[in-house]
Length: 366
Image (cartoon, rainbow, N blue to C red; front, top):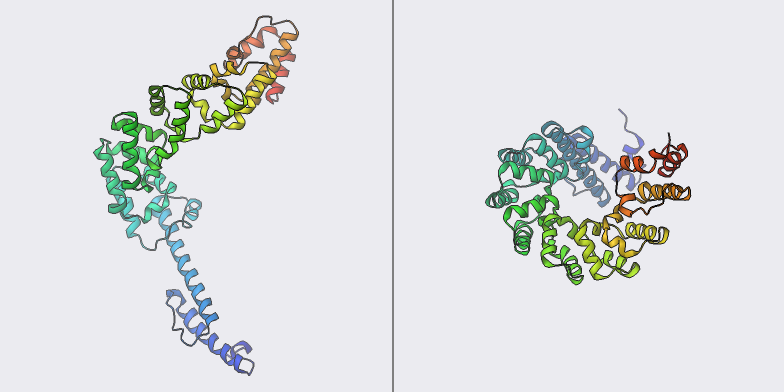
């Protein structure tokens, strides 16, 4: 076949050089490209070297992705969609290492479902050296009395521990939590199940400011530590902003903060926006004293638009019609479930308007 103009060049030096490059690229890249073996580049200009290198690397990465995708589908039971999303984070070209990881988990009592869950959460596990990266951690927990089935259950639901350093993170955090709360080993494991930051992160740094806030408010140490055991996740989020919000904006004293914590510690996880919106409704709209909310802090967690506003609006109608004359407590109005609320404040009056009003406030269409 007669060569094209591009193959012939245009008669000058540049054409001869282009012809040489085209010939080498054709022979070396396309003929040998399937094996991804790089040719000798000593006679090629820099721009051609760069182009060939990019194509080689891209082809090599594509091979790795293709193999990893096939492995995840065939060996791990992934769907094609799930498998295609993983290779962006994981690269391997041979089955030996991922096979050894899966075998390790199987040998330690993990079910296929648990293994698949682990790999989906942390696909990088397939590139680990099981004896170096996994076994020492397993042995540590076995030494703490954790059985194989229990460890498999814990790690499949909270696998971040497998990415943490045993010597620099897990052991120091385990000992810190145990010493601080004066609890048994199994209590530390229970705490980790509730909040993986207990062992997988620098838990000491996370909770130190929160402990200081509670101690400053006069919460007894025994109360703090018992709540830490029961609700470790509470202490992993900042309580400093919460204290500033209720103290500076709504006038809570340290004693009231301590009282609220003792009654319902979960409220301290609420966002500033949530607290401000709820307190504004109770104090500015309903005319309640701020201190009343400290006595029942669970009220702060109720939905403004799904509970507080609809029920308060209905109560105003009942009061205006003289259907309710006695005072209704906040707990009586807002803390009861939907069925009890309707039976107490809607059904007895047999007034379709009130039900319609209530549903409109809820945003419910009939």
